[in-house]
Length: 430
Image 1 (tube, rainbow, N blue to C red):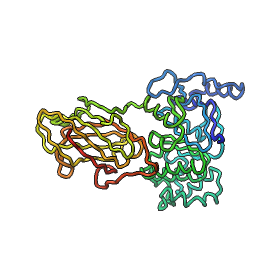
Image 2: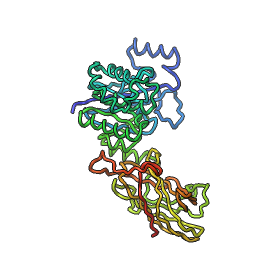
Image 3: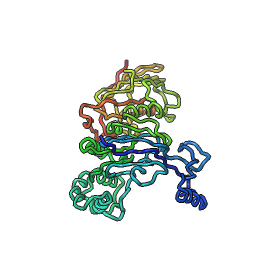
Image 4: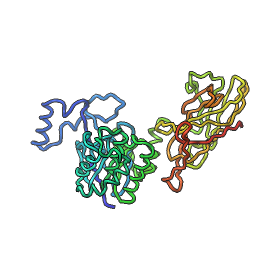
């Protein structure tokens, strides 16, 4: 495949808090050295690595430093890393929003980008007018844009507001229209930043599906920045991990994500967790309390159709009848998707420690990382309940295997319960 993007020795330097070098004499010195003497920028010889967690001694920082890569046409590349790693800076340089300090970039074809909510939109113009304006900027004729107009509007789902000024749009509507324009106006290279996270779950699914079509079906190149590892893994073939403006690792996306999780994620997935004093909710009576949680299979990884089975150790100071365990499942973005209320009750005696098998029947969760909150008490949600102990995120699990049809979600929507997904649970005393 021909090369779509070639980057050589790319670096970007900023001076904190100021524009230019900060003084007129420094600006004149830079101009004289570079434009008259034809020498290297004298201020490139100083500067520190862009580590946002430390206080540096220099005002100059390297947002990117010595980036070299080649991206083939039709490739889908995921760019990951912690906040401040340089991901957005790289995409802004690729999108020609800002210039690199040093280095070169060679492109093949037209670039469309979606970097921030509202980027490229004129707030006073209508959605229709902004579609034509963006298409013109990309070099398309009015006839070409008109041919794509219905498809863009339908995908964005904003037909009713097409002739309304964009300043009246919500952030979600703006992102929908912006992505639809960028994806449908036939770019050779599509650049998408974390902005898709603003959209709802339905739109995110549509957007990822469209990017797959653009890359696989139409042979176009996609660069995708996201903190959602499940989306990156599902969409991308190759990946780049940035750290403090440097490429830390590149290669197949699975290898890059595994390296990132193993070395940079602060919360490690453990099959066994002992509950410490600090993990208990201090506002609870602790008449009954959790002692430990364990994945019975000895691993935190499950398939999309595999039940999550836990062994939970509980201690009680009192005789408690009709006791039960509730749990809430959260995504890695801390979005609660389900509150599981078990219909199985059990009895525990004063001074007794018991092991309970807690089974979560997996309706087909999508690939990704999840954590859970647990509570133990009596009663139920409709009649009122008393929780003796609440523990937040004591244990995590990962769904790492898709169905044969990776685009199909096997989930049941529970409109009356907590969260979005219905998950049946069972509780058995061992």
